[in-house]
Length: 129
Image 1: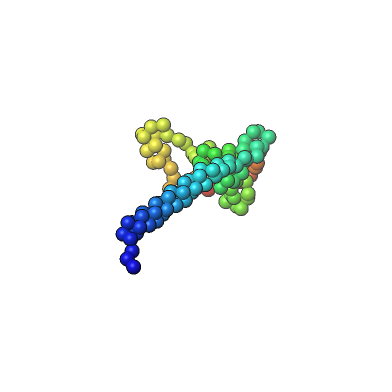
Image 2: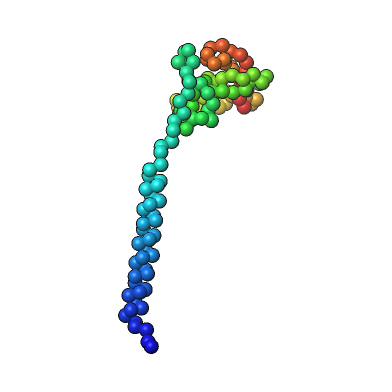
């Protein structure tokens, strides 16, 4: 008995259509799964009596969402907080200012105050190199 060439072509075409259709269905299901994921949760930092947020910078979802007071360990092992603005240092407004700031920095780094959670009481120093 001979195989029907038209039947074989139809069978091959049906298999091809099923394979392509399955790939499209799986791909669209994956897209839906990705799109329905919950957004990144922003960490809510507690605030001190002065309205400053405090906590670990590791909980921030971006550089901009870091707390006002960032937890740190000072040079003598004291646990406290650094003011975010102290960490960032002086920010230049022009390229010439940036060069001047860079040239004025000491090669050994700098010390900044380590604060209690109130953001006012200095309890130690933190060294930045």
